[in-house]
Length: 476
Image (tube, rainbow, N blue to C red):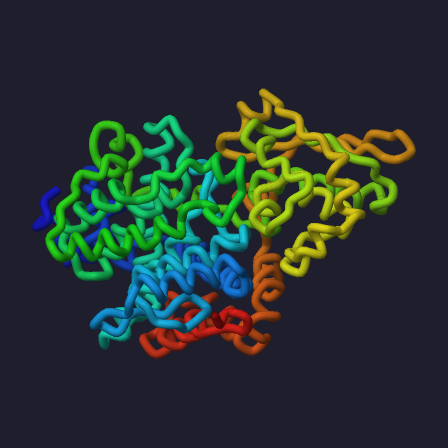
């Protein structure tokens, strides 16, 4: 389909992506996608992700990891001539790339943001900081931004990130971090935001694919550090790629977007939304791979009226990658985030895993450590084979009186087949945000975020101010 043909369709009342009989090139999809092409369930998901991500960002802004990223952003990414962008939940101005970097590290510092199970990673932790940073820079330059604009850009970034990730997982032997494929989606969305034409959008994707962080995920799982999921470099890579393409820098093709290997994944672009099919939400601030086991012990303790002193240990059968999380005695928040044994022990000991538990005192708690040391992780080939579309685990509690209580194999809550309720998402947001933002500011973010796509320019500016201004504990 030619660009002229797409323009003609845009002038009509037809939702042309759903009506087109031919595959739409990704650059045309990015250039001509309109707000009214977004299905209502997708908009509802984006509202949920907006509120959920801002709650994670609020508490993330108080972490050591976020503070380091902010200091580096100020030192390396100057404001520039256009007024710059504010760092998420901090308010300091630097370049859009710097704000995207610091914001992505902020969200990634607390492992509680949304994710995509088939891609074994996360998009929102890169997409929100990048899109909000570029939007803030556009506002600083005098452009009026509405909620519809934000929804369109977020949808575009999510969907193209997910698709790029699908292709990468299908064509690359090594398991790369989310930063590798979110860089591409961020570049495509930011190129649209910056007014690039279709050719420039295509080059932006290629630049981001080439220069984005092809970082090995299992290295950070085997050796947990602040590197996390790579989005801290994926987000700014996408922002810079869009800016380079706008100035004439070339980089096409992005092999995760076009070509023979990519075609099976991109052929129904605009008629099927992977964002709707694949996005999950986390009930606990730790790696998703630990969640089915955490859910299991939560239910077993409740259903059998057990107290922590009843439990001697546990056996967790799960898929291979998950057994490499281990984490019986984590020394840092990074090690806690990439662990199974300790979070499961924490659930047994306290009946919860929340932001109030992300402390050094928790990591040193002798009652939790006793349980964690007595947990065995078992590499189960059958569960490994099943852990593609979902993540599986089976838990057996070993009681001090010698009994063994077995749970069924299960997948975690938060997937589409077992979604967290709106009330659970709201409670999680306030649990994370209220102590940092205060109840009034948190309530206003929740109110505006729950309907952000309907905001006019004034309402959108208020929402950006609420999300980008500083919070207690985020000053450096």
